[in-house]
Every structure is written in C-alpha cells, then in structure tokens.
Length: 276
Image (tube, rainbow, N blue to C red; front, top):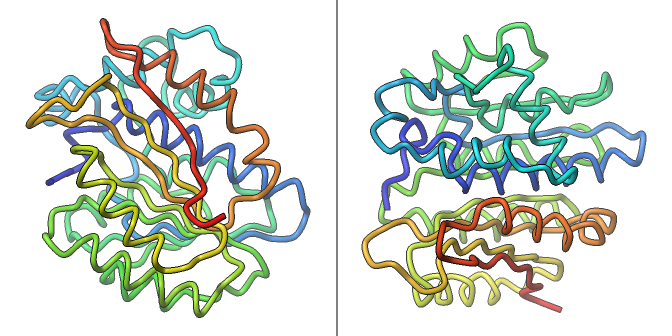
C-alpha cells in the first residue's frame, strides 16, 4: 500500500493517530523528567488541505472536519492543536506529527525529526522553523537505531512510514526487535494502514512472536466489514504505554469511533495487549 501523506493529510487515520499521540505524551509528562521525542518518518510537517493532493482525495472531510465539528470534550486537545496552525474558521493547514509534538514540548524536552525524501525534508525544515526541533535527513531505520538510547532517561519514538516498499513491515519488525534490545523500557509508536483483517492478523502474529512484554495494539476499522480495494482504517502498535494513558484510553477511543464512523456504518476501534 502506498500512503504518501500529502494525499491523506487530515483523514480519519490522522485524527486517531494524533489524538492518541497527544494523550500519550501528556501522560508521560505527568513526571517532570525530560523526554526526547523522535520521529523517524517526519514528512513535510505541515500540509495544505486546499492543495491539489489533498483535494484529489477529499479525505479531510471525513477526518479532521468531522473532529472539529464534534462536541465531545475528549477531542478538545486535538482540536486546539489543529487550530493552533490556523487562523480560525475551517482549517486550511493540517499539522503533521512533528507539529503536534512541537506543541507539546516543555523546556526540558527535546524533539528530533528525520525525513529522507529531499523535497519533503526541505519543506519540513521550513515548517519547523522557529521551533526547537532538530531535523535530520537519513534512512529512517538506520536513524531509529542510531538515536537509541536517547540522552534523556525517557522518550518516545514515532515510526510512521508511507508503506511504499514491499519490505516495509519486515524492516519494522527487524528494527523494533533491535530497538527493544537497545532500549527495553522506551516507548515506541508504530502507525500502519489497515487494508484487510486477514493481512493485519498475520502481521500482528509476527509482532507477537517478538515477545515484547508490553505491546499494545489499537485498531480503528471504519467499516463494519472489509471494503475491497480501499483504505479500511488504521492503527497503532505502542510499546510500553504509560499506565495513565491506558487507563484513559477507552473513553477516548469511543469518542473517536463516534466522531469518525462513516454514514451507514458504526465503525470499530479497540485496544488489545499482544503479549499479556
């Protein structure tokens, strides 16, 4: 599956991913000690919802625009982060994960971003100008392992690839296994698109076999059954999520399901520990 982000910015997958990312980092920030936030596939950092790519798919209408219109206060933090890069009214810009993370930084925290694509890394540097972010241009999987363990005692690695390469999932599995050996207590977030339930079940089983003790899987299926040939949803694998995050997760997931369910479908969003 090719998932170039400029075509999908602000869609339902982004709403779920970024809402959970905010909640996760805020839960970690209950402690005062410094965090290092690392994004291995940072993209452009900021996306034009009026641009040709986003307009071609129109996916933001079923994602960020629904979330902005939804009254549930559990989505307030997400809405505020989107509105922070816009000047009011219907959003023209959508923040990528680097912008969400930058908004969460405390003085003691650090943000390290990586993007290999030459045009995207230039856009990323422009989007992050004025923030404390450090920007690298390296192979994402080499960068991931090179950054571990971070200089601070705690941190989060966000892995959000476009899934353009046929070996993407295999590289994620190998890199996650190596990363866990280097930094067993670290928090890692891996995003993935959902094409069909059978394919996803096979990948979950491969990750389960890594034997990582605290590996949470969050799945968001838009439709009540697989829709052939289209995007069916997305999810996150989260290694070592903090207790405060997992305790607050059920009502947030229900708020997201209700806000994003397509017309005629109830949708499904769930969380599951892969290795209890």
